[in-house]
Image 1 (cartoon, helix red, strand yellow):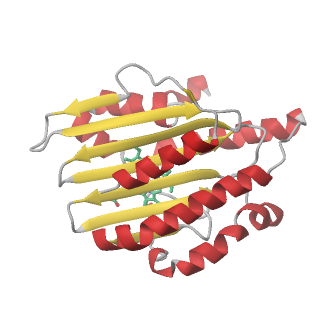
Image 2: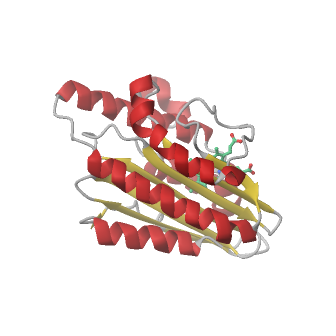
Amino acid sequence: MFEPFREYLEKQLFSRFDLRSRSIPPGLDYQVSDRGKNPATIQSWCYQCPELRKIRYTYIEAGETAQVFNSVIYPSHCYDLPLLGIDFLSFGQKKILVVLDFQPLFRDRKYLEKYIEPMRSIRDKYNDLAQNLEMKFYDANQYFSKYLLFAKTDSQTVVNRLFPAYREYVELYWQLLERATPLTDPEDIQRIVKAQKDYDQYSADRDPASGLFSSYFGHEWAERFLYEFLFEDAVPLAVTSTKR
Ligand code: BLA
């Protein structure tokens, strides 16, 4: 269902950036489950380049029961750019949930004007994919922008609407990155280091996928996947008091 989205992103990345592979801890890059009725596989890719310090994407394939494409792009710490966040989920043909956003690290007016307002004209074109759904796991006012695409939809809309919207958002993201001037003041850079780390902690602690990972691949694997790969700058909840 979302393979063309993964392919598009990969081609964009390889044609625009000087990518190097970034290692994925052993056993987390690929896993097969035979616990459920349908075998499930999960595969992840991770890269870096001078402008983007971590580019990761994951594809889950469990036949008809689940197909997921999830990605986060973290700019280098000298750019205060939002993170590019992608979460496209299909559970059977009936439940398709798509989320796409430039995930803001800060919320002051100047920041939003610079990085979020440019999304507006695209978002307005794809009103049908911005459904103002309520968030149960996350807080819409933290790390989400007001121009996110967030929709419950169907497979036809994924092809006809989401794909062109996705291309436009990704294209705009490259433009914002191209226009950005790298920060040089160590204090400014530290502020971004902290904001990206806070994002990882927030996201790992709330990830609605942890149950899904556990059910397919076991609790232990799920915890490692979350804290050693997806959100590696987060510290597991149970040990925060001693390690953080
Ligand atoms: C929701 N994301 C979900 C859900 C799952 C995942 C299972 C719940 C769907 C439901 O309502 O039944 C899946 N999340 C994943 C997977 C990974 C993951 C597979 O991190 C990792 C491989 N989520 C993101 C990113 C964004 C995001 C980058 O990981 C930003 C675009 C958004 N996912 C997002 C939102 C929801 C969601 C907003 C709805 C959650 C809510 O209601 O609060």
